[in-house]
Image (cartoon, rainbow, N blue to C red; front, side, top):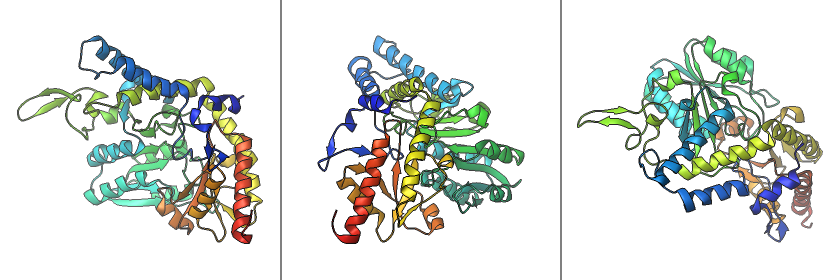
Length: 411
């Protein structure tokens, strides 16, 4: 059982006031806060072990290299990849998806082929495929969404055909808060000769993820959404696919031998990691994985489900408030997008901030989805393991106060 009050003691940033009110941080889908263990690990690396990796033979370089590669093994175990060579360090989910679209996409997609995504995708999982389709003369197709916010699997069966080469889907929607049926999608993609690419940015921090059980061909996620630093992320890929692919970036670290007119690459995973990597970020990501593993991902998932079961029904009782995505808490993660009638989401978010409650407002890098829902923007509260029912109550109170103020001019 998670003790959120105890866990939050490890997050120094949470103990401050914003606009003379205690901070309630509910923007976790954008980025999570960092526990002391991760902050300390970053500091320790720079104070004791700072050196470049894979190059030097001196003690600091050897220690940095050992810790950097130990972090890679932690990533492998965390998502149950078959081997560490299948886990590449990137700058984050966006970089990871771009690498797949550029390297694997250019290899596998030809004119007349199809790429299938859904209306609920983040821009990072739309634009790289738009660009690939334009480069190759391929067709980009979209899986529709049901009225209650789920991925429409009947539409998926219609859109994914024997012309499909790539299916790329979010594991969890960053607006609708739904968990997509990846195993079924993987079977559908593979039966049509396509690969499955997964945007796992909103899943890996919140629930157990087993890339082998899913049978994902590629899986991307970011460190900063799982208590790690910014600027570090992971691309998982099956070895047989990564072996076929060419690097996207070239330079130091990734070469085997350089001649005047040609070069050869290192073996996996290093052939993709050109230049000095984010060493401190990778090591601190390893510390974040240790932190989350000690708590337990299944426990985190269950705890967040309890929070949603507590707060979602309260939101649904507020007159004039619309919640997007499923209204059954059993099918909704801790991402809760909503709007108050007659109030722009930016005004809602600003008013909540005056109450010390930090939420997101805007299109959440999901403009095609919001166009599909026929709304220009939403406010979004997103919960994590250090949030409490008291935080949920503060959110409800702040929304009610905001509604009262804009309706009657007083709180």
